[in-house]
Image (cartoon, rainbow, N blue to C red):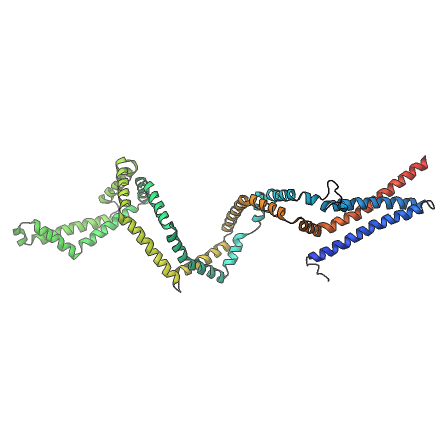
Length: 426
C-alpha cells in the first residue's frame, strides 16, 4: 500500500522495511563470501583475481563483524553466551535509570524549561479566548453556578469558623493606637478633618432649626426659670437669643477658613494624634476598649449575621436568570481581554508570572518525572522494548552492515595492493 510522503510510517511499514534491509545485508554477506571462494579458485589463472579475493574476503569479514555488533545490541549472536552481548536486555534497568536522570537534568533543567515556556505568549492566548463572547459567558455562568456549592462547602468544612478565629486572632494582635494615629494623621495632613468639622457644624445647624428640638430646649429652659419669668414668656426670649447666637456662630465657623474654632479643632486633632502615638495610657485604654468590644457576644452575632445575609444574597443572585454577579463577571472578563489586547506591558508581566509559576512547578516535580520515566522503562517487557527500538533505528543499524562490507572490502583491497607493491620491490 502506497503511503503519502507526509504520513508517518506505521509499525507494519517499519517492520517490512527492516525485513527487506536485513535480507539485503545478509545476501550481500553471502555474495561476498561466494565471491571470495570463486576468486580463490581462479587466483592462479590471472593476477586480477587476487585483488578480487582480497576485496571479497575483507568485505565478508567487515560485514560479518558489523552483523555481530548489531545483533549484540539486542540479543546473543547465534544464541551463544558470548560476553558483552545482548547489551540492551542486560542493561535494561540501568538504561531506565540513566534515561530518567538524563531527561530530568537536561530536558527539565530550569533554563531549558523557562526558555521554552518563554516562547509562548500565554496572555495573548488568554485574551484571544476571552474575546469570544461565548467563552466569557460560559466561564461566568460556570463560576456563578458553582458559587452555592462553594458557600455550602465553606460552612460544612469548618472554614467559616477557622477564618473567623483567624480574623479574631489577628484583630487581638493589632495595636489600635498606632493604627488610629496613622489613619487620623493622614486625614489631618490632607485637611479632611476640617470637612468633618463642617459636617458636624451643619448637623448642629440643622438640629437648631428642628421644631421638636426647639420645643425640647424651651421646655428645659422653662423648668429652670422662676415661674414669674415664665409668665412674661422669658423662656421663648432666651431660646431665640440662644438659637440666634449659636446659629450665627456656626455660620461664621462654616464660612471662615481662619475661624478660631477651626484652629482650635485643628490643634485638638493634632494633639490627639500625638497622644495616640506616644501615650502609653492612651494605648492601654485603646487596647482595653478593643478587647472589651471583641469579647461582646453582639460582635460575634453581628459577624454571623453579616455572613448569613451575604450568603443568602449570593445564593439568590446566583439562582436568578438575570444574575448581577454573572453580568459583572462577564464585564470583568471583557475588560480583562481588552486590557490584555491593548497593553503589551501587562501581557509581558503576566507571561513572566506564568513562566515563573510553571517553571517552579516543573522544578518541584521533575525528580518525580525522572523517576516515573525510569520506572516505566524498567517495567517494559524486554522483548517489546527491543522490538520498539529495532523498529525505530533497526533499519539504519542494518545499513551499518552494508557500510562495514564496503569499507572492509576497500581496506582489504588497499592492503593487498600494498602487499603486491612490496613484493615487487623485493
